[in-house]
Image 1 (cartoon, one colour):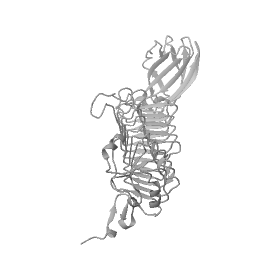
Image 2: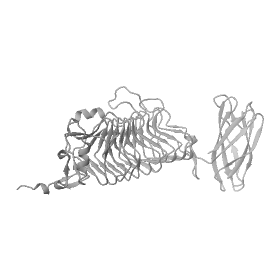
Image 3: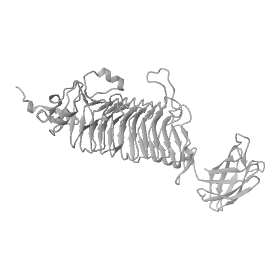
Amino acid sequence: MTTAASDITYHSRALNLRLDEIVHISDYALGDGSDDTQAFHDALALKKPVYIAPGHSYHIGELQLSDDAVLFSHLPATYYNAADMAGLGNRVAQLKALDGASTVLDLNGAKGVRLSGLTINGNAQTAHGISGSALTPHLQDISVFACDIGMGGYWGGAELISCSAGGNKTGLKDLIDAKVYGGFFNANSTGIYMGEGANDNTFIGVKNEWNSQDNYLFYRTSSNSIIGGVIDRAGRYGINLAESELIVSGLKMRRNGYKGGTSGHLHLKDARSVSIHNIITQHGVNDDGSTGLDSPEHAITFAGNSDRVTLIGNDLTGCTGTALINEQTVADYIQRDNQGVDARVSTGTEQAYKGRQFQSRATATVTTGATVSAIALRQAGSGSYSRAPRQLIVTGRNASTGGTLYGELAYVLSREGGPASMKFISQGIQGGNGDHAGTSASDTVQITLNCLTDDGSQLELSATNNRPGTLQLSFELI
C-alpha cells in the first residue's frame, strides 16, 4: 500500500508537522553561495514552517523573522569548536552570514519564533548568529559557530534545548525569564554572558567548558540559577560574578584557570545574595593527561564588598592552593559543612569561626601608651552550673609601619549557681614581627577584663598599646 504524501508526518522534539503543512526552502533559494535572503523572506511570507534539508548551505544576512516564524531541519550539528565544522561537510542545514551582514537571523520584536536543527555560521566572527530582542523564542538543537555573539539579545521567556555554541566571541548573551536545558558552550572567548538586567534565568545541565576567558560571566544581574552540569577548563574563571545574585547547585567544576594568573573556579566581586550548594571542585591538567597548568590555585576568590553569601555542603578541595581568599570581607556570611575549609558564620545566632561557634566582633584604635576601655563583646549566656570554653582572637595592624600582630586568648566562662565568672587559661601567641596580644604588661597589647554581666552574656575589655605607633585592633569572640 502506498502512503499519500499528505499523510506523512515530520516528528521532532520541537515540531510535529504534516508534509503538506511545510514549505521547502529549496523551492525558493538556490544555495549556491549567492544572496538567498529574499528567497527566505518569500518562503516565510507564506506563514508556514520552512524546512531546510541537510546538506545545503544558504548565504543570508539580517533576515527579519516575524511572529510565530518556524525554520527547521532534522539533522543538527554537534561539534566541539569552530574548527570541527570542517568535518561536517554538507551534512547539515547551514545558514551563513553574508559578507558585511551584522546578523544572520534577526528576531527583533518577534514573538513565538521556533528554530530547530539548524547550524548558524557567523562568517569568521563578523556577524551575530541569532540576535535582536524577542519574546518566547524556542530554540532546539541549534548550533552556532564563528559568530561575534552566537545567540541572544534580551530574549524574554526563551527556551533553549540542547543548543551548542563554539568558536564565537560570546556563545550566549542576555536572556530574561529564560530556561536553558542542556547543550554545549565551548571554545568561545566567553561561554555565557548575562549582562545588566539579564535576570531570572535558569541553566539546567549545561556543559560549559574550554572558553578562553570565563565560562559564565554575570554582571549586575539578579535571580539567575545554575543547576547541575559541568564547568571545565575556563581560561580565567569558571563563574565570574560582579554586583550580582546567583544560585549554584549540584555542579561539577574542574580545572578552571588553565591560563594561570588571576583565575579560579569562582570569582565573586561585590556579590549579593549568592548561594552555592553541593558543588564538587577538582584541579588538574589537560583531558589527555598531557603537560598543562595544574589549575586553579583557588576554589573561590572574593573581591570588593560582598554581602549575603552562603556556602553549604560543597567540596572545595579542587585547587592547588588556598581554597578561599578574602572571604572575611563578606558581610552576612555562612560557610558550613564544606570539605577543605572550616566552618565560618558571621550572621545570626549560630555564628562560627574555624569550626567553632562565633559570638561577636569589636574594633578599636589605640595610640602609643594609651588604653581604650569599654570594648564590648556579646556571647551566649551561661546557665547555672555550666561551663563554656571561649577563644578571644586579637588581630592588629600598626598604622605607621604596616606591621601586624595576632593573638589568641583562651578562657573558661563558668557559673556555679551564682554570677558568671571568667578565667584566662592561656596567653597570647606571637605574631610574625614579634608582637604579642596577651594579659601581661610586657605584651604589645595588654588585654584586661573590666566587666562581665551576671549571666555572662556581655563582657567589656580594655586594651593598652605598649609599643610605638597607633594600632588598629580587631577582637573576635568564638
